[in-house]
Length: 122
Figure: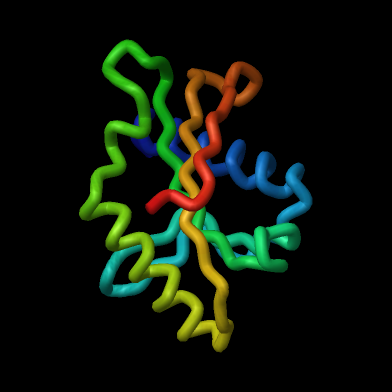
């Protein structure tokens, strides 16, 4: 596996542990369909109006030397994520509410990683 892919996998592992630490239930990882992929799908039991299914987009970088991970999430990517979470829900016979969150994971090693969490990315 390429170093970039290994870093991405480590970032997703870190993100999965992070959302589990929030008390969320991890429902799916790397769910794919012809329209794209969701990194993580989790159930946030304490959403604003009760439990909410959350698609979590994970962006991992070794450092901020070449920009912040948020820079990789544009309007088209967000629209695709919102559509994908609806497709995931249809495939899993789950009704809303739904939300898309983003996690920026920065660090070269699992022990040195930190994350920033944006909730309800529109």
